[in-house]
Image (cartoon, rainbow, N blue to C red; front, side):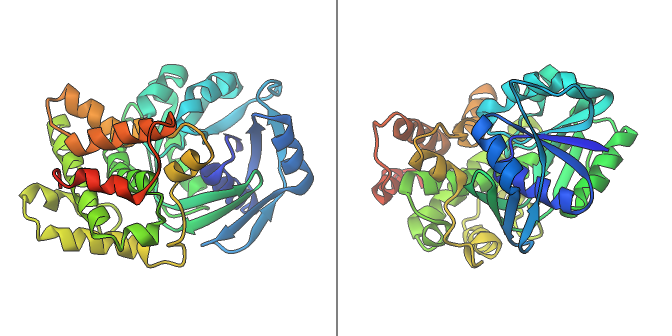
Length: 338
C-alpha cells in the first residue's frame, strides 16, 4: 500500500520513520521548499522510546501535487492547518482509500466534510513526541493507537490501517473513536494547558500542588461534559479511570495524580515541554481550540458549566495575543475555582 503523510512534524515524523523502517511505501507532503530539500537531502531522524532510527523519503510540495494516487493519506498537521492540508491532498486519495486525522483532538467530523464519512478514519494517538528540527523528532513515550471510521462502520480497509499502524505501536479498532479520542483529550488538556500558562515542564508541574489540583478540575469538568454528550469515556491506558471523578470524592485526587506521574512525570522525558507551550514560545497559534476550548464549546452546547476550562482557554488566547505573560503566577488565578 502507498501512504502519503501531510505534515511530518512530531507525530507524522515518528510514524513516517517507523513505517518506512518497516518496509512500507511512505511519501511526505511538505509545505515549504526548504523543508522538502532538507528531508530529501538528509533524511529524517527519530530518537527516544523506539531507539535511534533514520529513513529517507520521497517528498512533494503541497503546491505541486504529484500525478498519482494513495491508499492512505495521513493528515498529521496541526489542527489549524488540517482542513487546508486535506483539501490539497483529497484528489490524491484512491476511491477505496481513506484519509486519517492524526491530530490530538476530536476532528473527524471536520475532516469528513472533505473526505466523506465513509472515507474518514479517526485515530487516538497514545504516544508522546516532540519536534527538534524539520527532520528530527523524539518519541517521548510509548502507547497505542485506536482507529475507527467516522461513520462507525468497519470496512476491510480499517483492518489494513490497524495492521499498518501496528508496525509502529499496538493498534486496535473501535466503533466509537470519539470516546477513545475523548479519553486522550482529557489528559492532553490537563498537561498542555497547565504547562502553557505556567511555562513549566512536565516534571515541574507534576511537583506543583496547584497544578495537580488544576488537573483534577479540568478532568472533572471534561467528564461532566462527556456525560451530557452521552459519551462513555474509557480508561486512558491502564491507569487513568476518569469515571471515578464522577463520584465527587476528592480521594481520587491522589490516584489520578499518581497515574499522570506514572505516565509522564517520572520518565526520563519529564523535562519535555508540551506542544502548546512550545507553540507559544515560538510565537505560533496553539491548538487550544481542540483541547480545553472543546470542553468549553461542548459545555455551552449542553448547558454544563466549565469555569476552569473557560479561564484556561481565555488565558492562552491572551498569551497568544501578547496580552498576558507566561508565568507560574497564572496558577494563582485559579485559587477560588479549585
